[in-house]
Image (cartoon, rainbow, N blue to C red; front, side, top):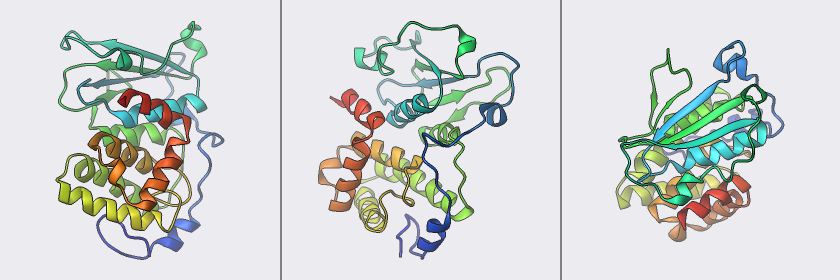
Length: 241
């Protein structure tokens, strides 16, 4: 039995029958998911506060760069007086840019004095997506992964738990989440099944930012090392130093 954040019910067989495919090999049609723009580069624009950097979005950016040709940029809004150098270079050193039409997706991060991260990809017509967890879900969907209803619900539950209880909750709530994570990770390599999902990204980042990583139980520690063996996670760890 896998312990979920909200209830204990046996979803092991359901998850195991879901079809997971590696992020680096699965093919997704960005035009289909984001809408065809007839030659214009689709540009994801994120506003985030440098005092609380959205680490999960930086991890997913790196994962997307392994799949797509991304035109990345970092800017500072006038509402922010100063931004640490490591955050200004959070996308690494940008090489000489090719013409915009040579890229598949634009990814612009603006350090701005906002209460929570905000994202748009169609500036003219789209209401912003707010909250790190919601933006992480959207960005991860660009990999084109398909899940059944139970798996999707479990992933969403872990994302919310990571944000609202692990990252923003009390010490008692964090302890309860760590116990649930430890139980789940005793049954599978990742929080939901045997492949990395957005739940792993958001939960790992929450642990890093709350300073509870070192006191995590054994299965969680093992899972964290699996995450950190992946380049997108290890690159973000440098921002925490």
